[in-house]
Amino acid sequence: MGALTELETIVSTADSDLRPIGEKILKGQRITGAEGLTLFEKGSLSYLGALANYVREAKHGDVTYFNRNFHIEPTNVCIYTCAFCSYSKLYAHREEGWELSIQQMMDIVKKYDGKPVTEVHIVGGVHPKMNLDYFADLIRQIKAHRPDLHVKGFTAVELDYMFRKAKLSVEEGMAKLKEAGLQSLPGGGAEIFHPEIREKICADKVDADGWLHIHKAAHALGMHTNATMLYGHIESYAHRIDHMQRLRDLQDQTGGFNTFIPLKFRNKENDMSDVAEVSVVEDMKMYAVARLFLDNFPHLKAYWPMLGRQKAQMTLSFGVNDLDGTIDDSTKIYSMAGAEEQRPALSTAELVALIKQVKRAPVERDTVYNTIHDYSNVSVESMMADPSFN
Ligand code: V47
Ligand code: SF4
Image (cartoon, rainbow, N blue to C red):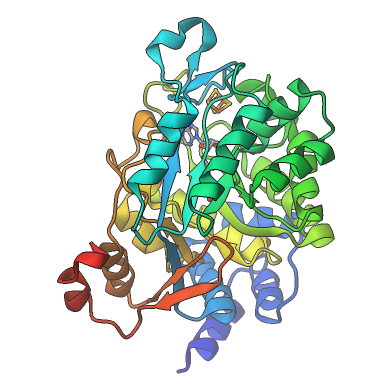
């Protein structure tokens, strides 16, 4: 039996509430919020996986993207008090945290001189003294030193604070950073948009409308952005669907989102340590429903430092087509929250091997998904022996 006929059989023999949803997906039709909720509540892992994999392969075949990147975390001092955060130190206790000068951040950038990285991802706490001019200066210096390095930086939470402090509108602030050289926005700070949950886990930072406004303004300037969702804590499936619905609606208007990244809540060393982490089955269901519901998002990413390498490999059968990057042990956000990877770093050869082990086609991309190199026909052994991939 061919793969599609097999899937048609799975769909036609499914329970009466799941069958019509599967039929819609096979016809390429959009599912509703209520149908998304039914998938979460009633869909078996195998049903969701089969459908999500069908959509993934229809969009991307076996192609699985990664990039060569590193992070800069300017500070973990933060004025906010998100209950799930294991990373931040309040301003009053800032001596326990770190605050990097522009020089120190440029030294990190210079460490990569001559290395084939294509992206720097800048993200950190909201420090009251690191303002818009400070970061515009940093971006200018990075671009002057290395014009080919794509600068992806600052969550909507950091941007909201910077713009308000500078007394600029969102549109003016974004234009200023774009002019300095900022090219795209990461997806952080979204957490769960619904106020019922947001008020409990991160009441004091930018709300859903403010987050979406910042991404809309970036899209209007031609910048691409990502979106995340922090799942697996005190939210319900309905809150997850509400979150994805708001993203899908904005994407219908702008088309500016590249990637959706579900982030699994980790419970170490934070004020929500009493909340149990969800199972691997829940993780895979989350990816699958995201792939099925967010029909207008081109890419679905599993951030491997958070999940660990083996679960990241599994996600490639549940709708995911991107694993993020080499990272080079340059981020602490997840290791501090108890993520699997305590010193996240993968060489290009290791990432390619990881993807090939599950029979997918590894493709190095730039930040906006232009292909840099297709490694499908390159042998892992030859890459392991080549220092430029290690
Ligand atoms: O918004 C914080 C999350 C995010 C915890 O755009 C936690 O390519 C789990 O958004 N358990 C920031 N998650 C990081 C981020 C990101 C990461 C990788 C790639 C991209 C991209 C964006 O980290 C925060 C928050 O949701 N986070 N604490 C925790 N205990
Ligand atoms: Fe600050 Fe971000 Fe941590 Fe919230 S998640 S406390 S905004 S560093």
